[in-house]
Image (cartoon, rainbow, N blue to C red):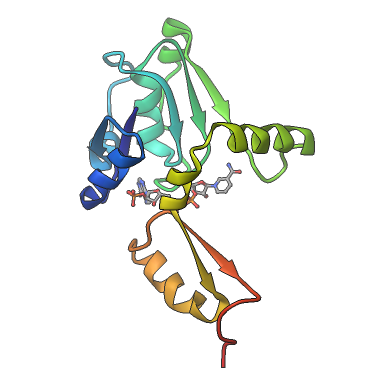
Length: 158
Ligand SMILES: NC(=O)c1ccc[n+]([C@@H]2O[C@H](COP(=O)([O-])OP(=O)(O)OC[C@H]3O[C@@H](n4cnc5c(N)ncnc54)[C@H](OP(=O)(O)O)[C@@H]3O)[C@@H](O)[C@H]2O)c1
């Protein structure tokens, strides 16, 4: 498994979560060729734009790419080459309108497949009173993983 990040300082943390290799996201974000050397059996992409196009262009024969975000842009500057020459499949992932049955299946798989110890390493809980401070850190790219806001806990905002 290979992880990509813009925060090189997070490399060891990503390796502890299971990444064999960590690459700088700038490498994937630059405009690339319509088709390139086969690298990935599967890709999960939260970025879009050139990163998604490059992911498709370097996915192995009959591999799959899941597009689930647009952190880098909503455009998709790609060609059909990976799809018609390598049989690559591009899956669209939507969590907003996903049917309940699909959600149940996904949650069951998360419960079964996710290592709870690793999950705990990427989550933390805060009280509602801390939300504004942590939101600023989140926007500054200083928050690791996911933050759960306990709306019952912590001090009330004044
Ligand atoms: N499909 C759906 O139903 C659905 C539902 C909710 C959200 N989304 C989308 O999924 C994406 C990820 O959601 P999220 O909550 O994880 O968002 P996020 O926390 O804002 O971003 C996720 C990561 O993307 C990386 N990133 C930020 N800007 C980037 C850029 N310009 N180019 C490349 N990477 C960049 C950062 O990783 P590093 O700091 O490690 O580089 C960041 O931690 C978002 O685009 C969101 O809109 C989709």
